[in-house]
Length: 441
Image 1 (cartoon, rainbow, N blue to C red):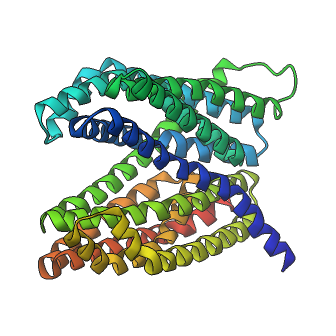
Image 2 (tube, rainbow, N blue to C red):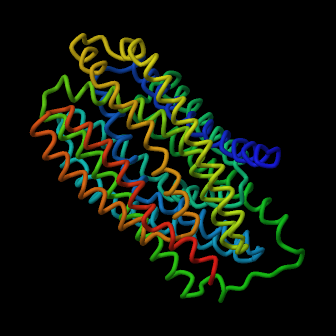
């Protein structure tokens, strides 16, 4: 009993820094909005919102640099192949810098494609351009930092991850306030502050990871260029990351479909769903913390060929995530209505958001299982199964949402959305025996 409790505490201690790191992200957006709100108007605020959205979609699409690196790092660490841990980090960083450099080279094409999809005024698009063409120069730093974060998670060093994330967001906040309020640079100031913070965080991340790896590697160890550029290793990384990218794009499409389908029921429904999605995003900050720990623990157990550790730790992490989901759902059920009233002044939006609040609570309650199993397949680098499960559950969601929303409008859409996350979890569970089978090889 005491040993089980100790296991739960270890997982909680590793998850808590990740939760704090995630929670610091919306604070940055809040400060940026306040800074622009003090010096600019609606056009500047709209430009910052849409400009940040463009980069969120770009960077989320390359999130495999964090996830794939975590799995490979944890497996090498569990196998005590510390040299391979270093090579994994170098390969991932090279890939991140390379992709970032390509984005800079193709920046005009990327910008034109993004602006074409934005339905806003020419003046706002002009301001978005000012933001975009400065912010894009931080792409290599951000994508390389994704890889470094993956290394830290794979090594289980979540406190360092928290420190790096707080440094990035804290410096970003200070620079943005200085450039916007102090120097009056408006939209350009937000972009410049972000780019400087991204490059500074990269340097700190490199220092952190080098210190972590130096403690693992024996003195006098040399670099093997042939092993670093091993074709089979790069091929495996590319294949794994490609599948994770397809999985991520499927998730993006699913959430975009939910928003667009809700918009078809009117502006008030669109706004109400957006308010409720803030609760869903809040829950993800917490549940992601446990999923990250699962990635590390599964990968480490896989590398060490320790099936017992895999089963015990996964069970403990699932229990903690389930309890957290119940508490989150109960909190939002009890306090969601006054929070909604504080988030919007529009009475019709308030009424609709409160009407559909129970659906958001149910979604949060059942979503933890999909998060946890995502962690299992990332840690085991079984990305093909993740891809298949995501595509299947997306097809299920599109079909069910079309049928139910045609009959029950937004309530039907929410029921389909709840079904979507349940099927995501169940379809991943279908492939779970394949992960267990890996221990027998």
